[in-house]
Image 1 (tube, rainbow, N blue to C red):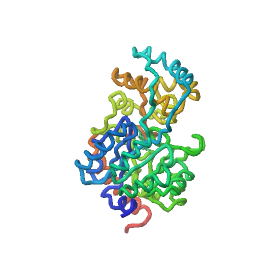
Image 2: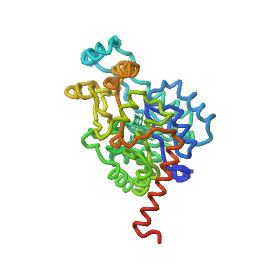
Image 3: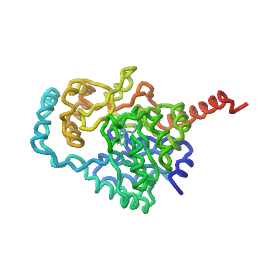
Image 4: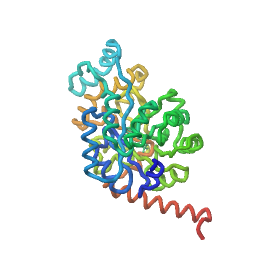
Length: 359
Ligand SMILES: Cc1cc2nc3c(=O)[nH]c(=O)nc-3n(C[C@H](O)[C@H](O)[C@H](O)COP(=O)(O)O)c2cc1C
């Protein structure tokens, strides 16, 4: 078996994007049961919680699913930088009526320990974002029976993953919601649109490509397959799903986004991510180059964002969403996946008729 065979054999070639903060096991299981491939967003999970979570999902379904980790660097920031970052956030905490958090002794779960837990848990697929694994780490996952998918935002990043021995590439276009996965070049050199990225990654590496960014319905799925992708990965399209854990003010922002453009910001986390613009993004824009790099700023704003969610205040939450957010619809994830596939098939038929493929 190969990852290509697994993807080709899916009844529905739709992958649910892992979404820290918006998706848990419930959404992943619903998508896998519908015939797609769900993914557990394990980026924020403690290493000790990963094994039990994957084991519970394996008990809940015989269908394959993925597990995703964010390759956060181990952060040892200067005390003065952390103090300056907290000073910058102090007015926001004060406005929300929350105490300024104490300096944490850890800024993100330990990646090496998370990786060991995923390798041991042996899901069908493991995907990684924000970096590239070493060859030995990839081989350990593969020996455990897990296919390795690396997220790439440029051809150079796809080649780095191919060099490391990955089984497939998730090509994340500029349109995508949430964090940009770039790890080789700076942001400006890593903003390739999904259409250009899928086509160029396909031409550069002999691995199955998963298209991510801006796919919101069956026409998008058909377009991704027409470009040569083996599957489409969808995130924003699931934000309003019943099984998503998107907080209510965030759902409201998604529903009401309309034609307002989404924006990239590093103000919330110290790493560029795309979301619906709000007051925090606007007012922090001038200082966003100064905030400490991910995961430090991410950890320092977490209590603020959680308090804002509890207070039903979208203006201090990270409202991650992709460029095509206005097409997001509510409903059951299982029905969404089935409907998108029916739409994709209809779109392919229309296209065949238009191009003279059917009489
Ligand atoms: C709310 C949200 C959270 C995300 N969290 C993750 C994550 O934990 N890991 C990851 O690899 N990608 C994450 N992404 C990016 C997705 O994997 C994917 O690239 C993106 O959703 C595709 O674009 P779309 O949102 O237009 O569908 C996230 C995206 C969103 C919208």
